[in-house]
Amino acid sequence: MKFSHLSEAGNAHMVDVTAKAPTVREATAIGKVECSSQIVQALRDGTVPKGDVLAVARIAGISAAKKVPELLPLAHTIGVHGAQVDLELNQDHVAITATVRTADRTGVEMEALTAVSVAALAIVDMVKGVDRSAQITDCKIIHKAGGRSGDWYRPGYEK
Image 1: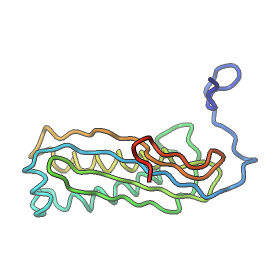
Image 2 (image 1 turned 90 degrees about the vertical axis):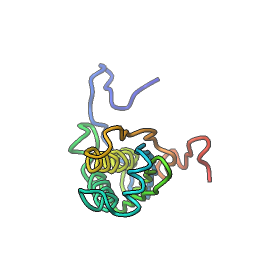
Image 3 (image 1 turned 45 degrees about the horizontal axis):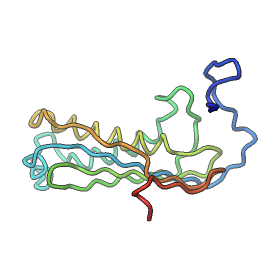
Image 4 (image 1 turned 120 degrees about the vertical axis):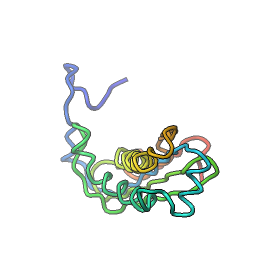
């Protein structure tokens, strides 16, 4: 198996995408913040002491999607042309879904994963004072579209 981020000599390098034509690309990632039912109820009621947790998490996720090249040293700087972060309150967790879109030379899978991860971190940060057991789980890409490889769905997440 050949890894694109390794040179022939085995050294890490940034893949040159100069010759690739920009195309529309999209990726969706999901994740969860597992927490107590009391925290879920406080999120529903808007009574978490630190404020509007879901609004902060949504904005944190969108902002994070635009900062991937600052976090991942081999990631390309691309235009994030659309980023949506959705949060759903369930009985024992907050479900997070992020979809990121671009019209560029490389995909947005890392941007979608970063959006989910940072949204989850924002939730944990804002509830940790009242629920130290909150934990981030199940972050993964479930769909990507566009580019050379076309559409892909994680098995079990097909439309």
